[in-house]
Image (cartoon, rainbow, N blue to C red):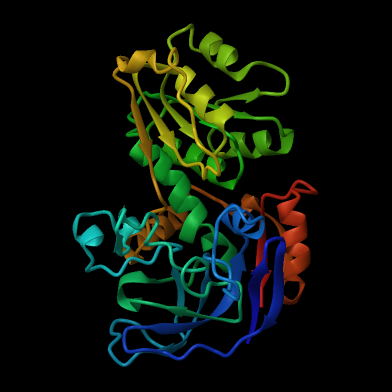
Length: 354
């Protein structure tokens, strides 16, 4: 089969690999649509280490090609998705209600992000076939009424974005600020609206993204290339600040800005993937006495999460199709990486079809 393989820093190439063998609890799916994530770009740049020779990608939509002998409740030929995070369902982390962190302990504690296996510790989804471990925990059937591109954001982008609002415990009537309107930030905006926020302020500098943000539920937009976002958000809230600030970029500047716009007792919900140490400014942290909450979240996975997200899509409450701005065949995935990695031509997400 064809697969996008990490060779070395700055090189992900299309090559051939054997089709995976199916174990008793596994399922082999024939990938019909997948995509490239910002995390894949971190891998490409060498900012997140993975093994050479690994197939990249963690956002699959496909059809069950073969089921393991112990897998029940699914049928070959069925359309399915699997979350980017594939918890086993029986680890200590899973039984504590934190399946995203399902991973082995090390001498320094547990392995962070252990539930993220596709394109991290096992071969991923940017290929013609994908082996899904613990299939009964991770596969979710796609309703016949939904097209691939309608559910393509569910495995990661929508699950992650929504979790920013969920972890921030957005309530009815809340004022929420979302920093960065890339795909995850846009889904965080939609998630805040679903959770009951009645005023959502989003920050970005690209007008095309701010336009999509308004369609996803933003009430006000702030272009940080024209104004200081902290000053503007405080002005818009009459100095009160926001109840919840969601950081969806992974930079010191946006993390700090999100902290500075919080009301006393507010919550900073961090979704960004950081590639260097963060510093918390003493004044913004109110010397540790501001009753603030800082919470981090890794994309929730598992079949029940995927079912709920697809129900949201089917209900018409969120339409993420606008996030797919470009389409490529798997044969052209190196071109897709070049476009997406350099953020050209207004790209938000690309759909990859074998």
